[in-house]
Length: 277
Image 1 (tube, rainbow, N blue to C red):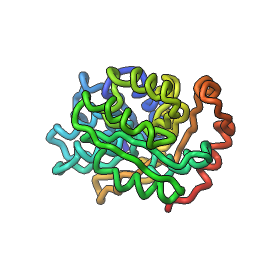
Image 2 (image 1 turned 30 degrees about the vertical axis):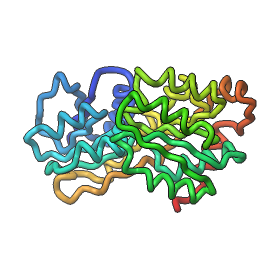
Image 3 (image 1 turned 45 degrees about the vertical axis):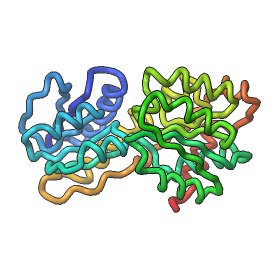
Image 4 (image 1 turned 180 degrees about the vertical axis):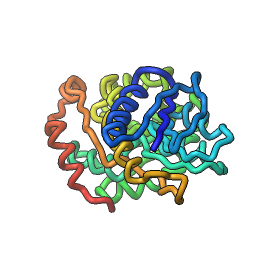
């Protein structure tokens, strides 16, 4: 079997995931090549693994029937990019299932009941799924939808008195390089902890994060590809969330908010023990 790893850009999380994926595949005797979007030259390949949104967009734009697996792509972006496409494609999503993050909030912050979320055009369709995931853990969702960047901070101000914690979702209108620092600073001043979806967000000032690391995703994708084999010979499976997970905690934020949390490893184990609703 021959697999091409198509990276959105060199280095960073793309390279971290690609190295783990390549090691997993080569140990099983699979031939692996790496390309970036800028270097892309389609070749004889049984799979293309598109790492990141830009790589997935590029792969789907090719006139090619080789099956594609998306990696490091959030569910909302995957759904948007693959709508109406005919190329065989599946994904190991970047984000964790909504019910798992709701379980983390209940386990880490047992005193909270009201969960806030700000949704943009890319994530508004998950509102009801979020509500159900929260309800299954005894939590109440307060979500607002915005259509412009200018509406973000007024929406947060409106939510502040109604929520105990803010749950960030990977929506590019809500979380981006222009909004992140101010968003985390304002929630800190409001003394509302933030639960996020990446290690980078925890390092930036979110209290908690639930995510699979790029290396975890790479290894899991490698095992899944070996199970699937020559994907073009049969219908591809539906995209799915990762089984892998990591809990991240920002101890400085916890201390400043006067919160004592169980160790990250303990929380991760407890979340893994929670069954899907």
